[in-house]
Image (tube, rainbow, N blue to C red; front, side, top):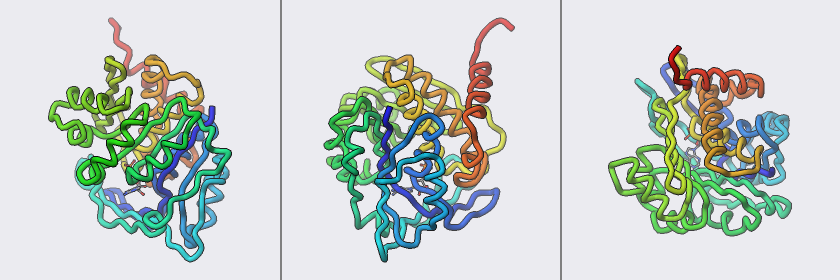
Amino acid sequence: MSLLVVGSVALDTIKTPFGERREILGGAASYFSVGASLFTKVRLVGVIGEDFPAEHVEFLRSRNIDLSGLTRIGGGKTFRWSGRYVGRMDSAETLETQLNVLGEHRPPIPENFLDSQFILLANDKPDNQLHVAERMKSRKFMMMDTMNLWIDHFRDGLKRVLAVVDGIVLNDEEARALGGDSNLIAAMRKISAMGPKTVLVKKGEHGSIIFSEGRYFALPAYPLESVRDPTGAGDTFAAGVMGYLASTGEVTFANLKLAMLYGTVLASYNVEDFGLDRLRTLTRADIDRRHAEFVEFLRHGSD
Ligand code: AMP
């Protein structure tokens, strides 16, 4: 079924203990759409500047992503984000954010995208997310992402988006801040009371946990020794979740649990190399192989 993502397309500069990359393809919508394209056809809405390299557009197109909602602003500069990871690399330190066209333009949603049934409102200013959310009349499952900046300083706007979405995905620190409770489980229940029936929390190397209509389920992360660049882990996790759900078309608790397995597997591949490099060569067969290994890892028994 149709899967739409609305979010940032960026040029990222990233430093980790394993190296540095300058102005590579990034942005939440790029990670999400490339990841989810391994599960279903993806529609992308985003904005880029005149300086955005044609090779990146070609790469996205080569993944069968519908780019009719990617708006290029003549004379504009693409959004840029620069961050670094140190030590355990459990969180990014933002070194610089240049909003450029992202701060000045709200890309139009093509008419033929308005019937999208699965929607990911990637991390963005709550007003922008609400603008999209209110137009999605055919939706079956709309999930939002967010970040501390909006939780801390744009809470009223965020609450208006929370009131209309079906799900939210965020990390544990953000969940505690948004829910206003240092106990993660209590915080998730409080977030759900603000609107979204499904609350999905990422805990980095400690896995993920879901609360949905009174039920909880938790997963560890895929056991991985080689993490080179965590950028996009959250977006590719969301991509596996939404990509799988859109491919089944049914949002049941059982499917949400399976979707978390795919999100975990996709994110584990993504962090193995810089930027989107690992996803460039990743195949559906790779996903299915690691998925089977992960299921075996989770299996309990007497052997
Ligand atoms: P993640 O590591 O999954 O949380 O997301 C990383 C991506 O988020 C990077 O590729 C950045 O370009 C993008 N990003 C960083 N800050 C922002 C922001 N303020 N708005 C939208 N996207 C952002």
